Image (cartoon, protein in one colour):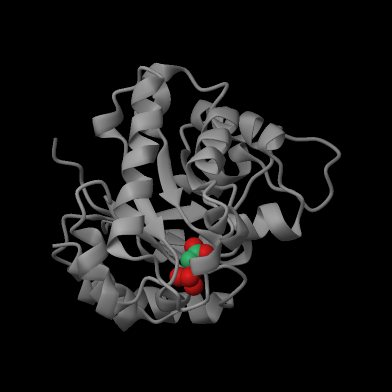
Length: 249
Ligand code: PGA
């Protein structure tokens, strides 16, 4: 089954509106011919600018988080209808930095993923083990637990609408990229878990994230169960990010 490669730029808490505009202007000519799904995930403040600048191009825009409620007394939060109003198309959910530093729980994710789908926002759900987890041989246990919990309220038929990002925490921002064997093994395992739920698992895009760079992207993206990349540090530079998009074939 041919899955369209999916390459996403997770800027995290980087880029002002002016810097975001500069990036988009530099990126667009470099990826004009791509057939891949190219997704940019700016901070909330730059969403509008990126959405407007990429109009008429293949670039799609994702937020980095969202609250599951449509509105309410949740100071500092942003909801799905607010993102949809801006023409944002996707949302990163459950990034390990949110789990680690901001108390994001599997219980909240079990509400956020269906809330995103209900508003036609494509969830990019992040899962991944810690270094201790891997050393203790618990990678598969952790992945299975996160997937089952975070997707508990998603109908099996809707699972292909979710993009999964496998991001081993020890590889994020460390320069310590997973080996092709580790990335393939974990992404294949994730597909098996989804298949076990009765999903059309061959349709689900599964990304690898963690120290993806222009010089290691081609090898990772060629793996049979790795359908794309969620890129942090290297996505801040338009030339580097375009090179990763190109490395997807
Ligand atoms: P990195 O981040 O590419 O800087 O390791 C990846 C991510 O956190 O999505």
